[in-house]
Image (cartoon, rainbow, N blue to C red):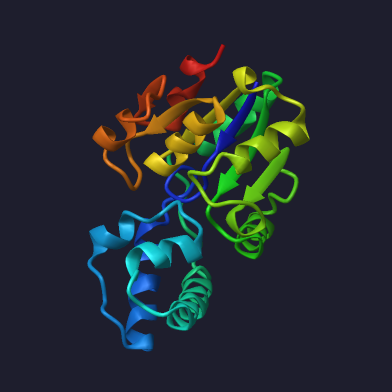
Length: 211
């Protein structure tokens, strides 16, 4: 089976860093500083899509300024690594030991994902990865379609694991089964709307959902 993971909020605990970086970017660009829950809501989207949702009335050029300021703030904050969620490393080893393929589908940029994978020495950890700036942002299914094509897996043999409704809606749009995690950015009630086969409280429980 091909098991595809979201990154932020599923693999690593990065919500606080994303929120703080977005608020810092807003202050530096002299726009409204949004509250934590408003920013938490867009975690999982590509950055341009997230900013359009957060600041729909701003001109494109102003959103681009915020985007640049956010990237600068996040890179600086990310010098202190985020923690993995419980069970991540053991699960990835277990999945590959059982013959499954593992991939990442993330709203991060390619540059951002490569930076963190390099710092972790995980450049070869996953069999494939896709980032929002090289394909379509979630919940568009293109990211999953590309991963399945690259790895030569059908939708019936693919599973998406994520913490937001964007992850699970993307899976639904691609005809792929999904598992939600309860500890991430979106409430369980939002995840349930997209028909996951399970919602788990720890990634260590994921193998119970695999065939």
